[in-house]
Image (tube, rainbow, N blue to C red; front, side, top):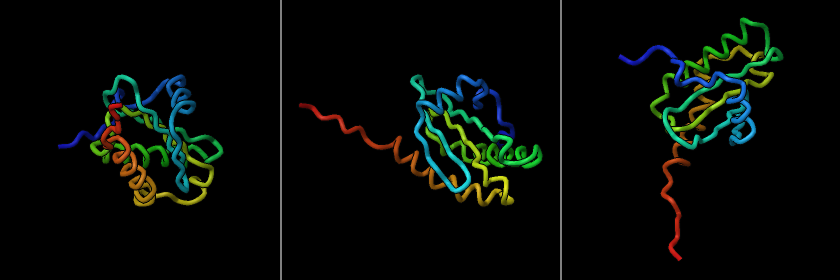
Length: 128
């Protein structure tokens, strides 16, 4: 049976960790989200951080968006590259429409495929 929780060791929880990911991570934009991706030096498990500001909506809307994001990344954790920090930030229009899991999947699955291709590329080291 798959793990149904999103444990502490796979979450980004400190403000400093979010800030490092914002500053040094690569940005990917979707219609309703910005995904910051930063490869960690020491590898390990992939970690997820979720940021949804008050501009997106009231507490009910913000919590729903966070639940959808955590559920997506929990279900597709096996497809994530190892040793990567991911921070998903909801854009303002994410709260205006009623997001559902299928729309979150449609936005993030192409990004996950792209990230997997990026990390599985053979190195282009040249002997000179």
